[in-house]
Length: 283
Image (tube, rainbow, N blue to C red; front, side, top):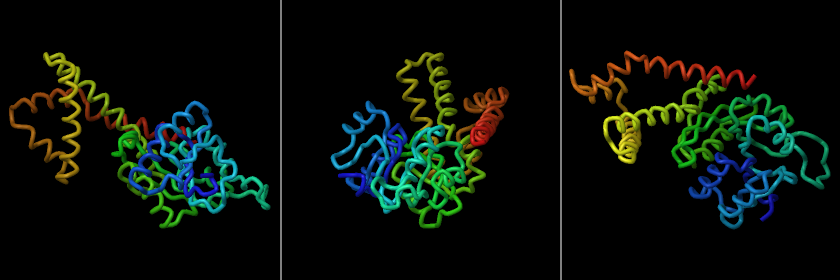
């Protein structure tokens, strides 16, 4: 298979790019011959070639990307986005229109944090439909959540296309682009906050005499179960918390300490700080 037959090109074969590729293949959104992955690092290309089924093209450059390609995903780091867009916007090698300029790919989904759609549109030549997304790392195991926002030229069809791609690794939510920094501060950075909470739960269990392995298992499934209960019950968080908290009981004693130490306010401030930092990086 050559890139000339690919419906989707994922530029960047890192953790998120490769996770998306696996999700698309496992959910049969794309056939192997319909997918190409661009990865500049030779060692990483070798790894990906061993991971993906036969038919998936793993190449070093998007050179020769056809104008009729369904679309591309930008899964590179923010400081490499401009370079990737310029490569995508180049006319295919040998094209009679080579050098004409303008995007040779019709639609693009960017999962690069902090990069506005306007910049991506400009780097692509101003005509491509751009959808910006902020996924999070649970996408690596198929249970991520991603907010998406449309650029100037993105239609309802383009948004549905992006939702179909990202739906292969989790849940999607549409937001206005001005909300993307808040999304970054909450769900983009949120797994790290929860890992910190999980670490503390494990340490608390160990301090009280549990084996670390047992404490880790209890903490992990407590977080998983609480999230599933919240999602599946549809109940308000305060209600769910009240269901666990008997007056004068063990949970009430623990919650009193958390409120005294201003844990709630600290997490709110963490979301605010991460959101503001996302805005700074975007500028």
